[in-house]
Length: 301
Image 1 (spheres, rainbow, N blue to C red):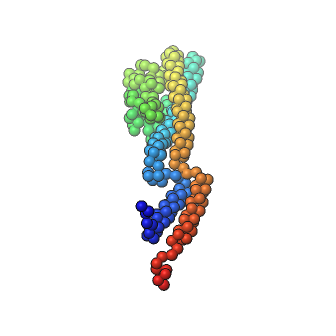
Image 2: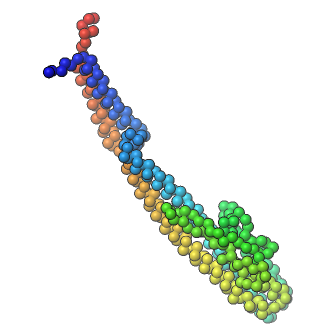
Image 3: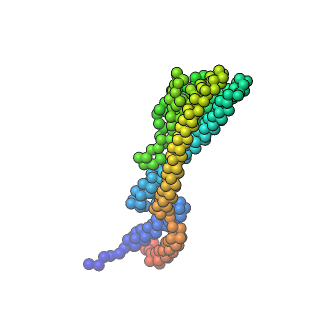
């Protein structure tokens, strides 16, 4: 049986076709305006899942990069501070060797003593160094100064570690407790704690006891070597963090590229598609005007 096509059916079909063409034009215009081919989940349900995953990974990578930058700043600052401490102890050693000469008068020994007292105070200031308001040699108690200015040799530092997350399930210790750098707390003043050593040298200079000064040379060397070892360890950590930094940079570039391929629109294709769609729309209007050109109302005028 032949289907009878009415005027209303022709109008309805024409309206549907025109609306479909206009919808396609609107989508192309939106993609052109935003520069993205996915503006809502319905545009590409599969693509949006990849897009959200890339965004999440990029956000985590950027945070890891910030942590790595902070870790590098901390490690570099530690190395600078330890270098200063090493310079102080080298000067102490030079002065001690000079003072151990039995020909020095007490006036000369007092002069050396006064300089070593100043060097000791400088070393206490170094031991109480802080970055961004945090003391670097007091473990997790970084809001408290680790060393007393009046009796630093008896000060006990916190042994907790400060860790930075530098990757997925990857953390890095960035600090060393003060006792590993300057020696274990020594209230009695008898060990190789660097402040105990300096106190004994100062006492020897006050009393003119050259032999007691000579006896501290090995302890000074122990303190210098201890600092050198810690600097070496920080150097190894710095190298590792720099490798992690490079890897995170590469990962960021790769994720950004994949996100771009998933989300970003191809402007060349968009412009071609927009032109084709406009031509189709104009053709639809032209054909529709010819097909639905006359109605009964036109003959009743």
